Image (cartoon, rainbow, N blue to C red; front, top):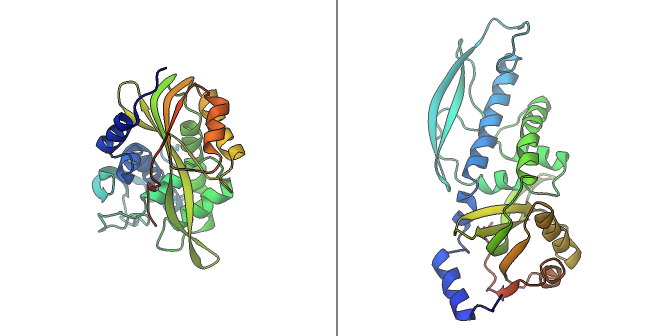
Length: 264
């Protein structure tokens, strides 16, 4: 492949606003919705003691009573949810309280749930961080068990064979650890296919930036079907260029100024 002039690359990147965090978040709107919906279902299970469509004996006279529609505001734009209802009206959503319609600020925390390198314990801790109120260990476990299949399916889904651009950057999110708020980083791989459609290819939590870490990221992309990337855009991430050369030796590498996808 012939080299594309740097000026053309710079203009393309500028036009597409690839440093805008909403570019990444918008690509995950359905994933964001899925996590919130599963959390609501787990809350209702905790309330009634039986799952949706469970026809076994129920220990409570209360019953599910369908759903009500609710649209919430987020950095992704409006998100439509189905809020479970019970006949007695005892259920009060916790992750999205009854009168709350703005959840801006939790998007990055939800995104981190999908990151490779997150253990089940990490995911459970992150789920607790989504709530402004204390929730029981049973509810955390129930939500975790519901979300793990979503995460696994997304992480292992097949990708396209060819991408015109692949960008790597970090999104920062706040979590509570040992009664302190700390900032962590999830590394996001954003791809643009040959039709110009943007897609988050993967998200990774890494202990450190090294060629070995990036090599595992790139090998994961290749194992999921990515055979060719025309151009990688990087911002000086340590060891990333060496890893690219090992996995995709014919790709162009373009340096961009360091601009994180999300700020704490």
